[in-house]
Image (cartoon, rainbow, N blue to C red; front, side, top):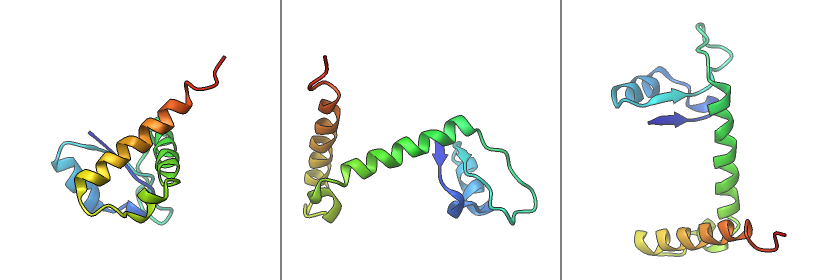
Length: 94
């Protein structure tokens, strides 16, 4: 439903393609763009959370180097790594 991206993906082609597919684009405009398009700052701030999550997942060497040969086994280990991150929220909490 929503495409969150950084300034590097600010192009009319990407915006038009996503609008045709029915998705909203939350992309800050580049400074040299003639017409600045406003961005919802709250939704764009969620992009930082997503990037931090990917960073934590890539701390697992197996995910970062993509040792798995098949998509199913790779996705399975993504699930295992995500569960490990999720479990940290419950362990050692008082």
